[in-house]
Length: 216
Image 1 (cartoon, rainbow, N blue to C red):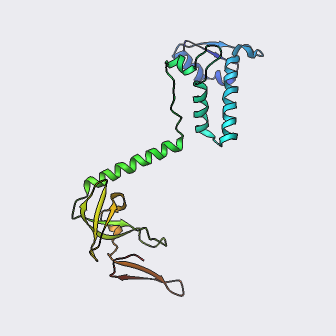
Image 2 (image 1 turned 135 degrees about the horizontal axis):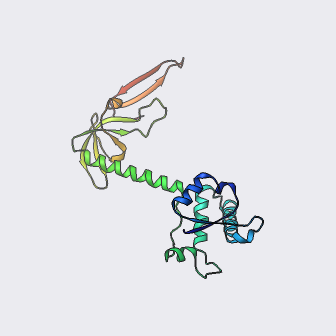
Image 3 (image 1 turned 135 degrees about the vertical axis):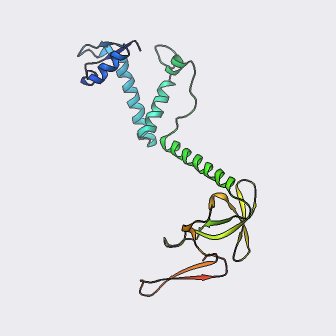
């Protein structure tokens, strides 16, 4: 802007603000101390925003960045008594109707997008006949393996699904590609049952491999 209105606050007189104003050739109008009417519009704006923040916190329990986003959206889309139009309409000639997106929703959206990208990449890499390990949904202890297998990819179905065959029993099942991992040194778990027991002294762990192909 060519001109800004500032009060007598010290934060506006430091070298950073002065350098910024000089670099962009912005003129400054300093308000008169003890005369709040000279910047009453700004004070009314702050008062309105604080009221919005208070209502969001008390009524809906919304605080932080999301509360600020909603308060600004409400203010910019409210008709001003002096102009008969909204601030957003005057500045950009259009109205914003989409609700603000919270920071948590943005992070969740990013995680979903990344997971979809990984699933697509894994889908493109896997081939019929490849060996894969499946996520172990039957884990009862932290010591239980996260993935079990190996399984052989029998066919690729629609919507990122795979039909896999148990190498030990020959049984087949349909799984999502996200639940599979390629063989690696960390996944050297023989195919078959993995039964983990603990001795009476609770100091030894015994691992027994059975050939039924089911996880207990």
